[in-house]
Length: 73
Image 1 (cartoon, helix red, strand yellow):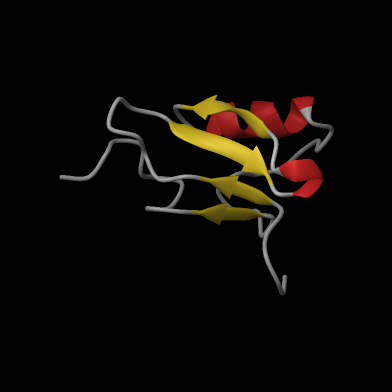
Image 2 (cartoon, rainbow, N blue to C red; image 1 turned 135 degrees about the vertical axis):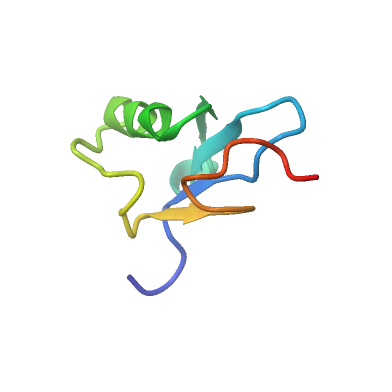
């Protein structure tokens, strides 16, 4: 996929979790995820069925990949 990815998962927050948002339509926040299952559920509710959060080229992971859920040191 070239260009910006339509889904952004932010870096883990100090209190835990990662904000998930879509870039289209003003950058709507879908929710705060605590694991890849949460990311997939938010995307399903947004109409994107059967997305594998760990492999999807639609998702930009900021501050670590799909295996990082705790804030860094």
